Structure formats: C-alpha cells, structure tokens
Image (spheres, rainbow, N blue to C red):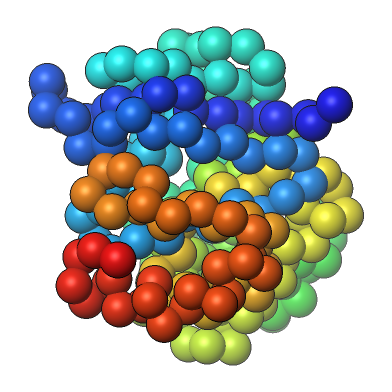
Length: 231
C-alpha cells in the first residue's frame, strides 16, 4: 500500500472568502519528490500555505500522515513537517553556526548536505550570499529529519550551480531517507530532473499531471503556458 504523507482532497483555499485554489487533488508519498509548477499567480504558494496549516481550507481537506488535519503550522512542524519559504528561512543577525544551533542541527549533518557551509560558519547569515542563505535554510529544514518537506522556490534568483546543489540535496533526502518532498519551482527543466511526479497549476486548478518522464514530452507546451497563462 502506498505511504501517502500529505494530501489535498478536493481542496479550495484562499484569503478571506475568496478562493485562489479550487478543487485541488494532490498527494506526496514517502520517498518521492513532487514538483508543483505553474506561472506566477497560479496558486502554488497558496497551496503550500494551506498544506502547512498557515491557511484554513475553504472547502475540502488536508490529510497529514494519514489523517485529516486542521492543526496549526506549528503543530504540523512538531509532527514532522518541514517548510522552506521563498524568503530565506534564516535569522539574519546570527552566525551560520548559531543558526544551525538554534535549529538543533549538527554542523556535520549540515556539511553532509552542503560542504560549502563549513567555511562560513562564523559569518553572520545576513552577510552571506543568497545561495549560502538558501543552503543554510535547506540544511536547517532537512537536518531536523522531517517526514515531509514543503519547499517554495528554492532556486529563486540563484546561480545555476547553487540551484543544482539545492535540488540534488532534496533528491537525496527523498531517495536516501524516505522524505516526501513537495517542491514549488519556476525552473521547469530543473524540476523535471529531480521530480518523480509533476502537477502543473493554472488559475488555481491542476491543468496537467503525470510522471516526469511523461511530462518531459510536454515541455515546450508547459513552458509556453508560463507566458500565455494556459495550455
């Protein structure tokens, strides 16, 4: 039987009474990377916020670790949820070392994901590059041994080599540790390289879904949808 870790069932969500996401069905299983892609405004971040517990569903339900939940984000994080937002999830006025200590993540674990962090342990996070901050964010999240990781735009504004390193760490966490990962990603080609399955959102709904191998043949159409807003 498939071990589904987090799931949206007929989920509608938004802000106030206005739905941004409508009738969404989505799941993430243990040990897989699922990419959630789509143009800006498609509803990807709203989906993550609702799965994380920051937003309350307007309809439908979120299931976490096999059971329906309306728990707060804090409670879900205690229960095994990791969340990396598109803003760098670090304390800017603290050193890299103290950021790891605050998250109760050992330096050795962090270096296992990102060896580049070792040489900047004494540097204040606010003085690190965007790539270094994102490596620190992801190391903090993965180092807590989550069951599920939600990651919003890891690659935003970063150099290709840094993006490759971040996505490889996500892939390794799923493959080697069985973490279920839901990855919101603008770089479609990069996402398809690491994802097992893909959902394409348009205007709050899933417009296309399938395995990465299946959707690689739709790549030109998918990338065109980012410009036109529809397939």
